[in-house]
Amino acid sequence: MKEIKKWSVYLICPISCFYILPMLIRDTGSAMFILLGVVPVLCFANGLYYGLKENKAMIYSLLVGLLFLPTIYLFYNSSASVYTIIFSLLSFTGAMIGKGVLWLKR
Image 1 (cartoon, one colour):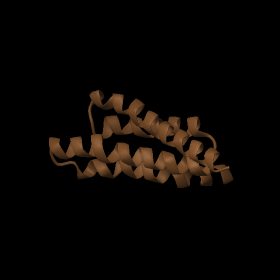
Image 2 (image 1 turned 90 degrees about the vertical axis):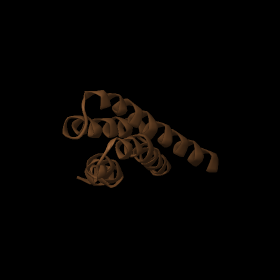
Image 3 (image 1 turned 45 degrees about the vertical axis):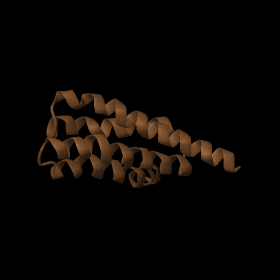
Image 4 (image 1 turned 30 degrees about the vertical axis):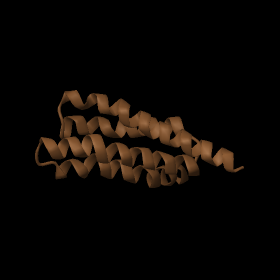
């Protein structure tokens, strides 16, 4: 139960990005802005924050990718499946940079 609480704190941001932001999409321009601008920046920033606080960056990145998979069928079409890899890599990169900053501080 303790582990679930710890993960849920860090996964609130990707869940809200993946499931609430697509509801704001009205046309192609707003879709591109959200998918190519807002969500990647938030995934990277959240990964960076996670990397500064926790250790398991690979598991976190896989969870971010798995959280995006249902949104492909809910909000997008199958061409959005490539974003699963992109968002996972961005969160992993952010977490690794966060771990590197933490390592340099020591």
